[in-house]
Image 1 (spheres, rainbow, N blue to C red):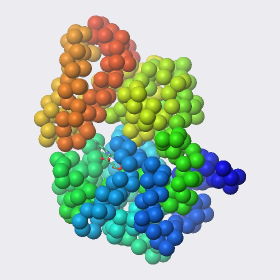
Image 2: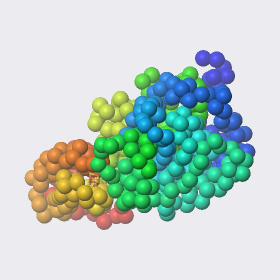
Image 3: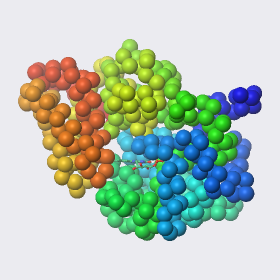
Image 4: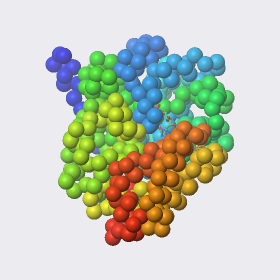
Length: 420
Ligand SMILES: Cc1cc2nc3c(=O)[nH]c(=O)nc-3n(C[C@H](O)[C@H](O)[C@H](O)COP(=O)(O)O)c2cc1C
Ligand code: SF4
């Protein structure tokens, strides 16, 4: 590796320059990142090749290979549309809001480059209607429009703020004037999405990575991270009191290094939730050996999802937190797939009753069985995510759940919820 490459490969990458304040003007953005490549400097096929060489996966939660999605949309019949998904419906995540608020031009550059590559002229930026980032994004767009900066047209779409509203078919449904509910597939949105056109939905962080890949190339991108998963990713670390901090880490970073960066004392935490409300509870003991890559996490049935790492203080009650989040998730079922509607609420109710001490320890066996029965049984991943969350809680906090079933709520049950 050359000296110059080594200097450029250090972290932060996406978050570069932020220590001196947000990069909300084009002037500051260009001072830190340099200009976006023109179509002459980087043609359509080259960008998709670069993204494939970087093995880039989506950062919205499902970690799907980006180049494969781009190729599918570009090959579909009709002029495609790009949707930048900035809804960030996961309650514990803060990374997409940070990008939209403080690095909007990185997201907009990525969107322009991807739109060019798939032959889209229209880009829709989807955010929650309640998001304060909306006005900032519109200001960034106005600055670009005044300088005739982009060869694609942008519009901001303000959608619902519910948990499932950020799922890609629910985003497309809203843009089409429908309800904020996932729709059944096929057809996939890549074939028939916004206005019945082929639609590519990418998370805003994914687009920000593409803005840098287009500038610096795949060798630069792949110089950090692990061999199978090169590059960096944003994570939101949630600590005691619900405080959130966003970090950029290289794939393969040890979990305890991330916790140390967030000043979490692992001796004072009682469990770790990886991946947010759809995530997996793990015992604190894994922190010293677990590296944050999809491959390693899969081995303990976990995933980074949209990058949430929550460190539950030892003084908090994991049973109360799990019961509360499951009830929330059950309430967020869109009510259109039987196994999800009935399964989610049955799981949440039974878990709550058992944890109150009114259903006995055997109730957990019912819950465990139901979490498996609802896997992959809906139009979206909602039941699968809920099942993973509850199933992992029962594994990781077995003793605590049994204590609650025998003796009822503990003293910490009434403390302020942390995972909100
Ligand atoms: C219930 C649910 C909620 C979701 N919410 C979001 C969201 O808020 N933002 C997002 O980018 N992806 C969200 N996703 C994932 C999207 O469906 C989709 O996979 C993603 O936007 C694609 O972009 P990516 O490939 O760049 O990750 C959600 C998925 C599910 C199942
Ligand atoms: S699986 Fe659940 S949340 Fe997803 S569409 Fe069906 S009912 Fe709605």
